[in-house]
Length: 244
Image (cartoon, rainbow, N blue to C red; front, top):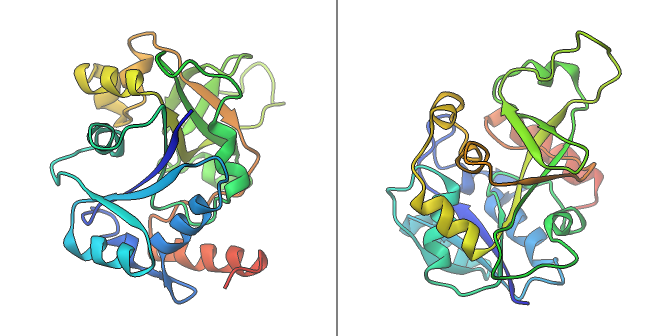
């Protein structure tokens, strides 16, 4: 089975413009994401998918393969779909370009042990919140699954509400996911639903249409870089891990 890693890296960002080029420990954030993806043994190839010449040149400067994609995409998944029409694979693993602290041993947890490449399959990673303050922060997506790991709902609000009992660990979204071509084709040809528009989360493209998404608790350390303050957190963690 051919497994390809893809790192979406767009130039525009309303909260943190051009963040893939921002430096962490003296290297672009994009470099750290690419480095950790390259350390995944089962990846046949790793690419950066971008829409700007600046990011293309930056990625190529540290040895990354680059595929140019449209600047019109509203979501990273739509960029991955376009990528899948250019690069052939059995499974596409998207490693978000703002996840510099997620290591190779975590990335592989979204890849199933057995898979029919022709079937519909989507999985994403999540992890437990370590800071209670993050649970009420609307920038952090809260994930609720059933016992089989199938996603029931995602919200920016703290869910589920602890009315009946308090013994619950809230899980947050980690920007790593795996998709078969069938799943990406379904995503591309299915219109946005009401819940997707309300929550601004494109996982609802599947959930609202009763297509199963698996969320796997990776029990990892994830610092999604959305603000300049997050860079300081990522630097501190990477130093702890001996990265330099």
